[in-house]
Length: 111
Image (cartoon, rainbow, N blue to C red):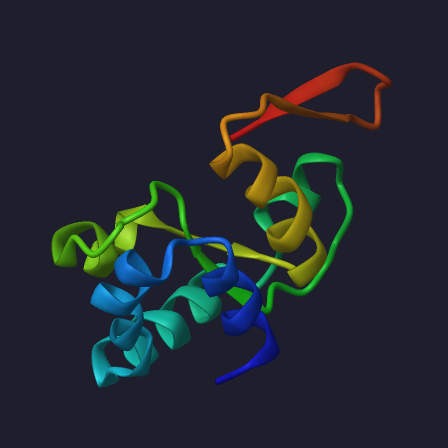
């Protein structure tokens, strides 16, 4: 298990986590992840502020919470860099409105 997976799972109650964490070890996820990063190699959030950053994390836009339909839906995936995934996306998942400052100085709501 990677450090990223450990951090992600530590925020979810273990009973819920145990029910679906195995999905990330499947061939399906590995194919989805590779395809997503090939289609969207740059961080979606960074691009909003015209910052070109390599994406290393494939994230579910809407939390799947074990739903195989949401888990495997390519339209529910986005590519993010690790800093955006571990900070901005985590705040969004907790229900916080997140805004970043665009290159024009105006706020851009993320999520």
